[in-house]
Length: 300
Image 1 (tube, helix red, strand yellow):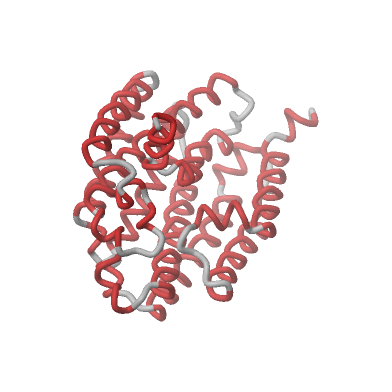
Image 2: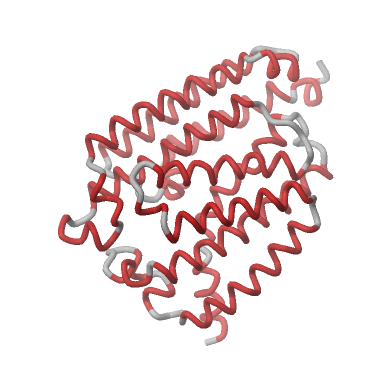
């Protein structure tokens, strides 16, 4: 019974969603410091801290949305909605997780801690209010991804390209809008308001228009990042432009899965289960690392 309860509590903070927190490693990769063990360990602590603070947000979200989740075809199986975890147990776990997260933040630096605090309050606003405001809801999701990237840079005290921040904003908007689009295509019209109120302000055509802008912005900003003066100066090459086709394919593949396979409600499942997309991400990573770290790997 104790083991089952622990498993349910862990499910409460949604470890499957921790994939999003890998964005904290963007700065160390593109700062050319991935081989720096000290920096890597700091980034790993930052990753754990974001897992902790996102878990706090999920607990609050599940408590406030418990009634709506109970009528959702998938969310009704969540620990709180299903009754596997009581609200009091969730509150106790919240306090324990908050203490652990605070310790992790304290082990880094004040700037990183302030970013994590900002992340918490932005997501708290989203859970309690903003999630019901059309368009603003997806922007708040985007802010969360941006803070992950900035937080990763703050953890190791390195600067980050403005183009990378813009790329993060656009790709996170793309994922958030895709999620709304997928929800619209799968939800029952009778339960639309009960499951997610903001969906009543969206429709599939509008979501598709916004996604076109977000997808275009992602590709353009990433391409401009690869050829920006700061990037070419830092890496002593402009060859990073050759990683752009992987980004374009990834966007197109995601759109294909969204429109033709009716997926997109759970982005983390797509990037961990769709083989072509997984191969594309791996190839993008390998080529990017090879270009950025060629001097250290090949002694050129």
